[in-house]
Length: 490
Ligand code: G3H
Image (cartoon, rainbow, N blue to C red; front, top):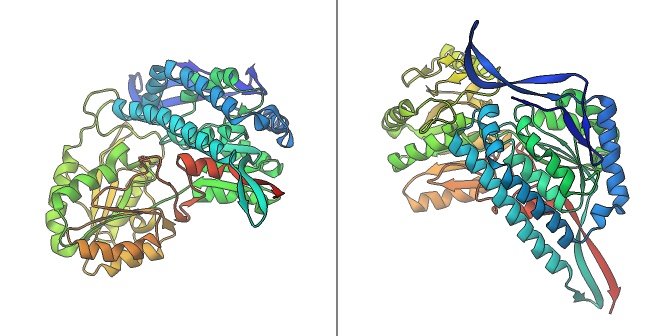
């Protein structure tokens, strides 16, 4: 077990003697009381006083833009980050193990999450070098010589999600640090311990006060920070409800920059002429990888009625083959869910659909056992059912039949979300006609491919309640900085 007792404030590792919270793995073990979630560690709960101290340390380190970090050259900041990557690589095994135990991600996906994160940091460093090169150039226009730079914004409050606790947290944290901001970092509730191995590395690699950590439930720790008015950027990968609540707490909300990755209800659309084998393969990946716990997952499938039976029979066949197992076992595809309340919520969604005439089509779909939730394909889902609009964020796949393509398009237009869509079809003219109306609704249209964030050099954002600001390498560097100009007359 990892019993974390330290936290990082102002370059000091503080030892904590106050209350802690126990961390239970979604993986169950046999106990005298039967199967129970395994206790894998504990971490400190930051008090209001320490949270404010951490905030003061970040404010002091930024020092209104005069601190060591915001004034350091980009080259020197990059050196610090390269040092940090080295320490991260040394801790790979420990972090990957914790990813499996803490959130139940398979060994393959946990390793991918780690490697992808390291690659992301290298790509971000390269993009920053480009920014540095272009900001040393001069531009002459209308008799004015100007140099256009990118400068930091101030204090960033950074909170990541449980489903990509390392990767998505670092996709905001790392560019925010690299751009010269100072940070208050709260790891996700499920996915805190895996950040512990890097705590000392933050202390060693960056000047004091650049990264300060806080722990505990966001609802307890974060309000006072927002109300202080000293947070310049709020970055959160999570729910739009929480993001809205936090933003409203800031006394100068119009001055607060928010970089947010939020809710999504991405639709997969299977046209009458789709290559059904391809659609099945991509929809399995899209809707059920990591048990459907991806913001980019396909969370509702619209299928043309003329091919619905054929698609569903093949789709259910493949769903039935998905292999449950321990995260570290070879071939495991379905793992236990880290959020303790999730199985009950998913069951409620299924029962609500069943009460309104839908059915679970696949064998054993929706059975809950020791945090495992066997994937369920629910059909026909219709307006008025929870699964039609609510984001399930789990292994339940609602399927809706349609006769006219206007029906799924109308669904997307009326949605509060606007992240991605996947369309499957073989008529290229028809696909081409659909792209324009769809790119005005979502931020990524996937053709004959699942919804996904990567490659990480592509912009990652969303419309409506799905995002604010843009992530991914270059865009993230922009999100955590402001363009500034140094100008003189020619
Ligand atoms: O949970 C949201 C992630 O951004 C999804 O990323 O599409 O690479 O799995 P992914």
